[in-house]
Length: 217
Image 1 (cartoon, rainbow, N blue to C red):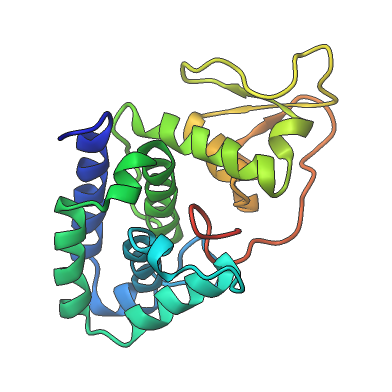
Image 2: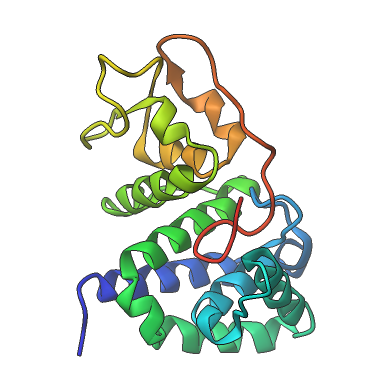
């Protein structure tokens, strides 16, 4: 049975793998990403691990610890082994990711941009993908830096505003859905692409590795 947005999830996973397949071995293993301390290999290891996060999670372990195990596992595999696993992951998403597809898709799209932007690659996006980034960024912000509660978030490329009503918001931030979503998710460097109507960027704690479903940055 194909669930809503499942086709889009597979398409974005394939798009990520095309990006990774085009990287040199050096960039794949140690290239810069927007996830502090993580290379493209590490990001891929985390994303593959998201399909199994429920199986590996233990109440006494933090999700950050689960993320570290995912990344450590990926670092023990060759590029060929990891990419072979990733092609299977792209075509056969786990039920947990299919049922929570909006979260999984947003997390995936954010991490794809972590790689693309970190390496300075072209980052043209399919029309719907920036909205997934914005929604997941808002969700992450609501449980981490609270930017979505402290700013009226105004996309300039065709999405209704998020956050408090204009009359209640102490400040307003505008920009593309992609840049806003990444900034809401804790990528502070994206503030340079945004417009702040009053005051300036209010930075929270520095980014930490492992954004998204299983992470905290």
